[in-house]
Image 1 (tube, helix red, strand yellow):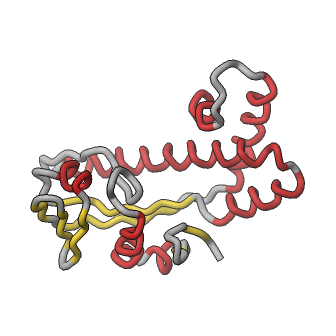
Image 2 (image 1 turned 30 degrees about the vertical axis):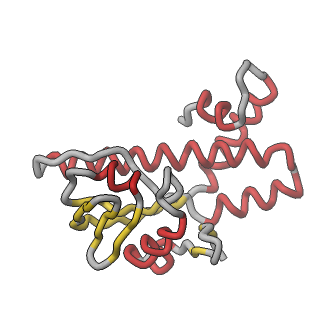
Image 3 (image 1 turned 120 degrees about the vertical axis):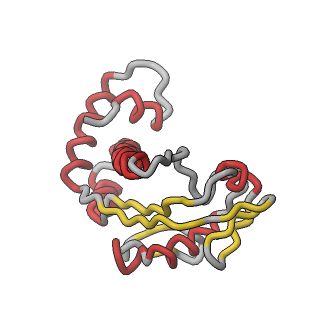
Length: 176
C-alpha cells in the first residue's frame, strides 16, 4: 500500500538494499496495524495583505504563506494524526529493535502523507462542487512560516480536545 520508494527516500537510501527493503515491508505492516488515523478540519475566510494572512482576528505574518495564498479568500485548516499507537510502536522498538526505528518512522511519515493526500482529494471534490480549487498544503515550518503558529492551529481546530494531540512549549506535537 505505501510507496516503498518514498519510504526508502525518507531513509536516504539511493540504491537497492535488500535488507532495508525487507525491513520496510515489515515496518509497513506494523505501522498499518498500529495506526488509527483521525483528522479535523475547518473551512474559514482569510484576507491576504502584503506579508500577512488574516484569519479572523489572527494575523499570520509570513511572506511565503501570503505569497502561497495570494488571491485566495478561504482556506481549510487541517490537522491529522495516525494516533498514539504509532508512538507506542516506536517506543517499544527503541528497546526491542533499535535499527527498525527509522524504518518505522519513515513508514509513518509516508502513511501520514498518504492520509493527508486522501483528505485533500475529498476537500478538493467538496471545493470543486462550489467552483473552487485547492492549492497545495502548507504548514508551519515551511519557508518563513514560523512553527510558533502551531498554537493558532491547535486553538482554532481544538486539536487536543478533538483528536488528542498536545503541543509542547517547543511546538512539537505529541501524545501524553
